[in-house]
Length: 125
Image (cartoon, rainbow, N blue to C red):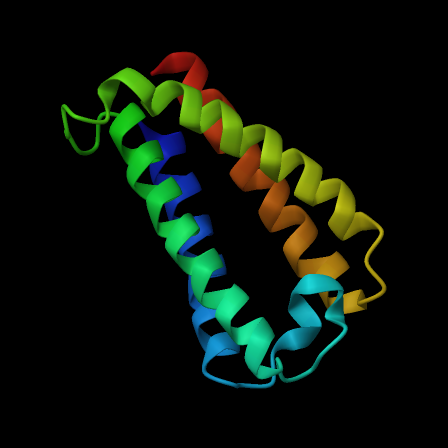
């Protein structure tokens, strides 16, 4: 399913950004309200946790989209996709109100596209 591919790739882009933030690179304008250009150590831990959650979400959208097949995930996969869809719609709204111009311009549409992909994949999966 194409929406599973698009959603997983867009979430992978976000995961890569958070890996870069966790490594201390100066891309903080794109995340967490743009408060920090370089994430402090405690925030880097949050970035690592976020990457793990994003990778799990990617596995679930690919499962529901029939790109991969992990039978253990099947009973909860659709529900997880609905959860991430709701989370990403909320994240989109939060990004709209970000103080960071870069976050508004880049992460808002990326979050919205990903939310739509999770929703459509869940509805059609």
